[in-house]
Amino acid sequence: MQTKPVNLTEALATFDEVYSPRIVARVNDYDVRIAHTEGEHVWHVHDDTDEFFLVLDGRFDVALRDADGNETTVILRKGDTFVVPKGTEHKPSSPGGAILMFEPSGTPTTGDRHEGDIPEHVDSTIGRQLS
Ligand code: NI
Image 1: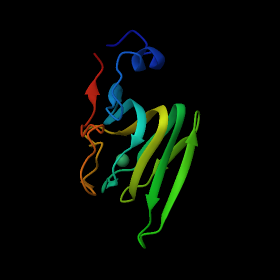
Image 2: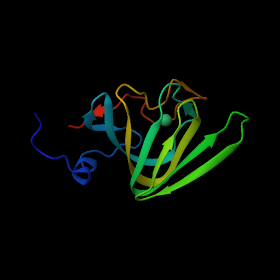
Image 3: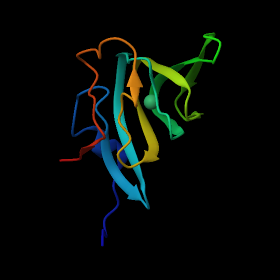
């Protein structure tokens, strides 16, 4: 049993990579992950799960594409929360910031499908352990 709290500020200070989420907690079958954000992510979709975001610092934008191909960008600032519904194409971007995500363990950061090449600064992972 874990008997120490995990401090998110301290956890974020242990790594620098952007878009490379670290798992800070497991809740039943879900992961709580944190990540630094900067630059463009990649268009992708999670077919079977919603994805919850909480902005811890800075700004984090989520571009969404509906079934007709229309795009909308949701701008999120520190303290904002947002859920991308399952099956919705989305592409995060950020001028710099940090986020917390809540999603089923094993959910890949680049979705079940993605569009084009994965940028070098985007880690395709199901979440890494905090060191
Ligand atoms: Ni996603």
